[in-house]
Length: 397
Image 1 (tube, one colour):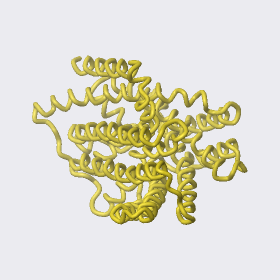
Image 2 (cartoon, rainbow, N blue to C red):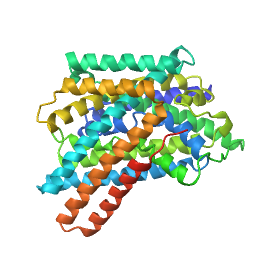
Image 3 (cartoon, helix red, strand yellow):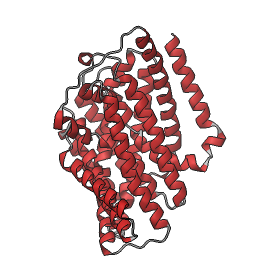
Image 4 (tube, rainbow, N blue to C red):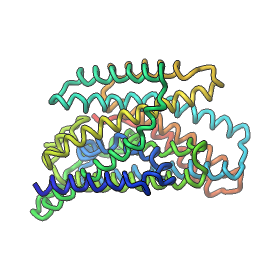
C-alpha cells in the first residue's frame, strides 16, 4: 500500500511540475524536449532485464559507460554546432563527411522506426495478457501502415505537436517508477535481501553486447538539427541538459534494478520490465504500458519525419517525403517479420554508431583546421570507437 501511495504521489507531483507554465513555456525546456524524448524513448523499457541478465552486479557500471560514451559523442556534435555558429566553412573533405553523415543518419532512422514500433507491438499485446510474437508483429505491421497512411495523406505536423505532452507523460511515469523502485529497494536493503548476480556475458562478448545497446542512449543528436528554432547556445545547453537528465534516470533505474531479483527469475524478453515491476506494485505495469505506447509512437513519428526531411534535402527534392515514408515502412515490415527485436536493437545501435563515427571524424577535421590538435586527436579516437561499434555490435541472445 505504501509503495502504491508513493508511486501515485510521484506521478502527480511530476505531472504538475511538467504542466506548470514556467516549465512548459520555458525556451530551454522546449529545446530540451526533442533530444530528451529520443533518449528516453525506449531505453528504460528494455535495459533493466537486459543489463541485469548480461552483467549482473556490474550492470550499473556498464550503464555508466554507455552514458559516458553518449556524452563523448555528444561533445563532438556540440563542438561542431559552436564552430559552425562562429562562421566556420568546411572544405571539400568536410562537405563529403557531412553528406555521408546525413545519409548514415537517414538510414539509421529506417531501423530505429522498426525498433520503436516493434517495441510498441510487444507492449500493446500485453494489454490482453501475455501476447505472442505473431500478435506483436501484426500490431507493429498495422501501426507501420498507419504511419504510412498519415504521412502520405496528411503529414506529421499535427502528431509532432504531441511531442511535449508525450515527454511530460513519460517523465511523470518514470518518476513514479523510480519512486516505487526506491521504496522497494530500501525495504530489500533493510532486510539484507539485495542480490549480487553474476552476469552471463564475459570478456569480448560483454563488450560487443554493450556496443549493441548504444541505441538506448541515442537521440541527443537531434539538437544538431533544430537550428531553425533555436540558436547555437540554446541547442548546446539543451543537448547537455537532455543527456544529464537521461543519465540520472538511467543510473538510478539500473542502480536499483540490478540488485533486486535473482538472475534466474529474470528472463530476457522485451517486455520483462512489466513482470519485474509487477513484483513491486500493481500500479507500475499499467503505467509502463501507457509510457511504452506513448513513447514508441511519438519516437517513431519523429524519426519518420526526420528521415523524410533529410533524404529530401540530400537529394535536392528529387526523392519526396512520400517515397521515403513508403520505403521506410517496407523496410520496417521486412525487419518486423524476419528479425527479433533484440537483433533490430543491435542493428540500430550499429547504424547510429556509424553516424557518430562520421560526426566525430568531421569534428576532428574541423578541430585540426582551426588549430586545436588535442581536440582533433580526441575526436579521431572517438571516430575509431564509433567505427568499432558499427563493426562489432552484437544482439542480446
